[in-house]
Amino acid sequence: MKKVSFVIPCYRSSQTLPNVIAEIEETMKTLNQYSYEVILVNDCSPDDTFETIQKLCQEKEYICGINLAKNFGQHGALMAGFHQVTGDILVCLDDDGQTPANEVGKLLDKIEAGDDVVYACYSHKKHSLFRNFGSFVNEKMAQFLLGKPKELYVSSYFAARRFIVDEMIRYENAFPYVIGLVLRSTKKISNVQVEHREREVGSSGYTLSKLLGLWFNGFTAFSTKPLRIATVSGGIFALMGFAYGFYTIVKKFVNPAVPIGFSSLMAAIMFIGGMMMLMLGLIGEYIGRIYICMNNAPQFVVREKIDNRKDS
Image 1 (cartoon, rainbow, N blue to C red):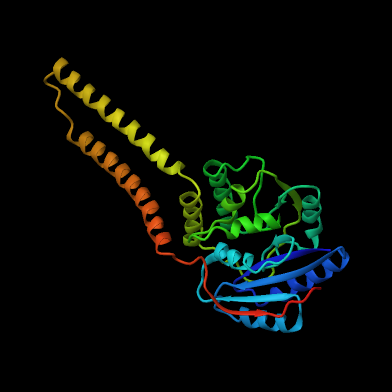
Image 2: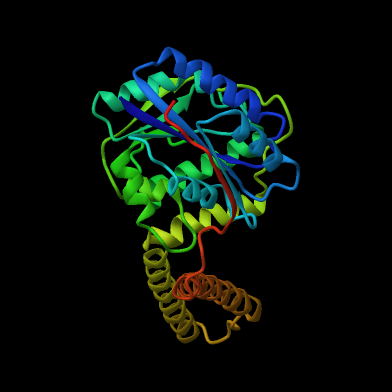
C-alpha cells in the first residue's frame, strides 16, 4: 500500500485547519488503496495556530506538527515539511480550504498514470485581485527565467513522486524556491483541473514585500538570465552612447552655430547612470545571496516537533 504525505504550511489558520484535516480524512477513506500522513508546519504564526496543531496531533495519530522558530515564508515552511515526509507520494495544499482536498484523487490518478509532478489548475480563481496579479507575475517570471513551459500552470496545490521530494531536500542553501526545484528535477509535469473555493475566513498572508521576496528568490537562486540581460543592456546603452556622441560631433561640424544642449546631456547622464545603478544593484543581489549561503544561513529552524504518527 502506497502512502500519501500531505504537507501544509500554516499561517493564521487556526479557524480553517480543522476543516481541512476533516476533509482530508473523509477523502482518504474513499481512497482506501492509500495510507496517509499529514505534516502541518506552523510558520511562526502570531495567532493560536500552533495550539490548534497541537490539539490535532493529540486527536489524530497520522499528524506531525512542526513549529518554526521564526517566519521563514511559505517555501521555507514547505522545505521543513519535506524533511518529515515518509510517504511515496507528496501532496502540498493550502491551510485556508481554498484548495479542495476532496479532489486529491485527480492528482493521484495522474501520478499513477506516469507523471512525476501534477499541479492543480483552476478555471476560476477566487483569490483577491492583488493575489491574482502576484500569481500572474510569478507565472511569467517562471516561464521566462526558469524555462517553465507556457502551457503549464503552477500552483500551491500539487502532487509529486518520492524521488522529486528527495531531490528537493538535497537543496540546502538559503532562499528555497519550490517551483525552481521542481522544474530543474523533471520534465514530466502536467496539470489537472480542480475547483478553487472562496476564502471563508481571514485574508491572504502574502503582502507586496513577501511577493517581491518570492520573485527575487526565484530569479536569483535558479537563473542567471538577469545577469545576461544586464550584459546585453550594457552593450546596447554603450552603443547608443557612442552613436549619440558621433551624431553630436557631426552636427557640430556641419553647423557650428548650433549649441550643445545641456538639458539633453543631463537627461542622458541621468538615464545611463540610473541603468548602471540598477545593474550594479542586481549584481549586488546575487553576490549578497552567495555571501549569505556561504554563511550557511538556514532555510528553516524548528523550535518544536510533535510526532505521534502511526500508519493509518
